[in-house]
Image (cartoon, rainbow, N blue to C red; front, side, top):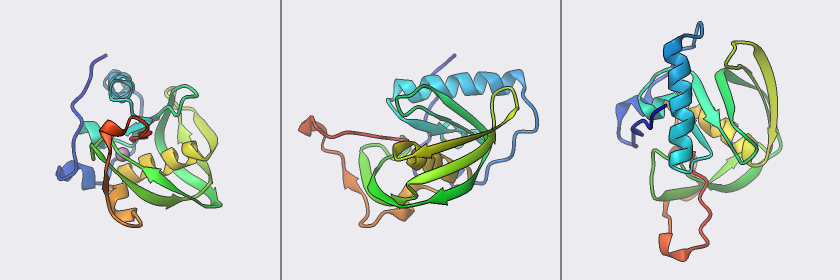
Length: 163
Ligand code: NI
């Protein structure tokens, strides 16, 4: 596995639609392994393929409960509402307030290309929404309530959840 370079806001690739993955290949397996390694290296809770320059519908997430890999994911149910801080590895040093559903159900394929349905609430629901948005070329920065804020690194207590 290898750490991949993370594309940052301003890079056109982050605004493009991703293509569905028709079948699992060695190349895609390597990509998924690299995405997980890259997410952990940069202490993110999620990463989408376009963030490493690949326009495929693949996201990886770990909100502290172990790695989740979603291929061709779609949100099939969403309910409730949560408003809170959000960040993104493609927008380093920033955060913003975004309202998302509190509960989300996702249908996707796993790494063996079997269909799975996963439910998330709280941070996991937020991560599902944020990462799936990436696959449609959408960044959280366009959904913030009052724009972007600088992360106060010297603060020590700033909890970062970059996705
Ligand atoms: Ni992100």
